[in-house]
Length: 141
Image 1 (cartoon, helix red, strand yellow):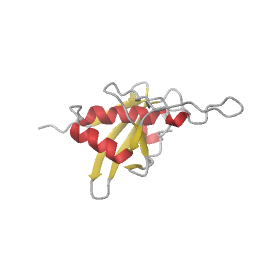
Image 2 (cartoon, rainbow, N blue to C red; image 1 turned 30 degrees about the vertical axis):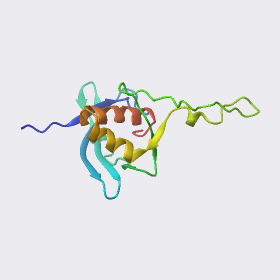
Image 3 (cartoon, rainbow, N blue to C red; image 1 turned 45 degrees about the vertical axis):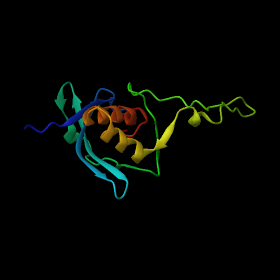
């Protein structure tokens, strides 16, 4: 059986806008006793289809998931699930004060491990979706 690598293209470098990037998952440690999930990854850099990763630092930030963090609950299309109890509260300037309550959240490790173990979605699809979400939040910049 051939080993399949999990690779996901992400946004271009914010500093070098013509440099394309992709994430490759190098390892996954799922520890139920500690209730933690650690993802080990590398970022590859490309210009005009040529790998130029050697020009960039290899160090990447830790990607650790545990129940000290919360995560958005997602539907089958990976869209955030609306909080049915959400009531918008605004301050005196009209700014929404509780926007973070608009969508359902759960403890991160419990949610991710449940998806990995109890849904028909395969692990590579789950991780690719989370890579894109983390890219949107700026994790890889």
